[in-house]
Length: 327
Ligand code: ATP
Ligand code: LTN
Image (cartoon, rainbow, N blue to C red; front, side, top):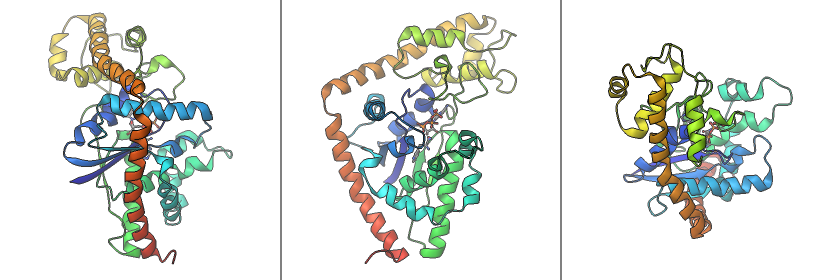
């Protein structure tokens, strides 16, 4: 079975972009792969976090993993900072990375805004992500489109290290992206990706949003003025984004949707979309409440960390051996 690894930051507000780009793949892969899913709390402290809120958010993301269908009997679910190997391998990889390649990372450039006071953690973020992946001899990494550059860096680091320290030092992974849903755009500004951290809460639909909030976000979503429900990302980014969301949640193709709403204007289309999204999220919200009430979460995460920790130890032993580190 192929080894799969992915992670989501516990920064709150997991939205339908995270779900359609990443989480949905987590669930699909777990029947025929050996999946490890992580809550990457060390990544989230690259920007300041409130300790109490962070701890809450970690449990919130873990519960959402289970709520969307990640099954702890099939997959390993754990919190990154519970396995010390992530930080350890991260240092070894740091010493094999170049400041030039890290400076070119789009996410770093966007988030640091070239400020002197940009946190060093933001700069090192992709190396820690590479460590997460390489620590488990991962072959497949299901992620959204925006992570492509980080996956490429991970591959470059693995190939570079294998060239210098022996070809069996690290497994070179591959990214896996959804055909549709890999990049859901913000509802208010459909040329930006939907984001957890955007200020306007109506720019996204979070998985735990109540129906009236979902309705407001969709009815307010930015569209164009020609009134035609047609998929055309270049000229009609707003409607195209809503069509993608409608299509992946309902399973109806975009062409069929275009036909269905021919001549009917945006109002009806949006009203139906509200219903589709509310219906799709209702069972997830129900399961989330069940998981939170069950009191099983801590046990699942503890067992997950033990399982992940054992795999991590094996990889680290091999890497350190090849680097000549330790006794
Ligand atoms: P933010 O949305 O605040 O920028 P993020 O991108 O850091 O947060 P993560 O929690 O790190 O979000 O991402 C989790 C997963 O969701 C990643 O695989 C990422 O590629 C995916 N993802 C994030 N935003 C979108 C989006 N708008 N469309 C599709 N996938 C997305
Ligand atoms: N950088 C990712 C989150 C992340 C991740 C990982 C994803 C951290 N480590 C390892 C896949 C594999 C993001 O989506 N912002």
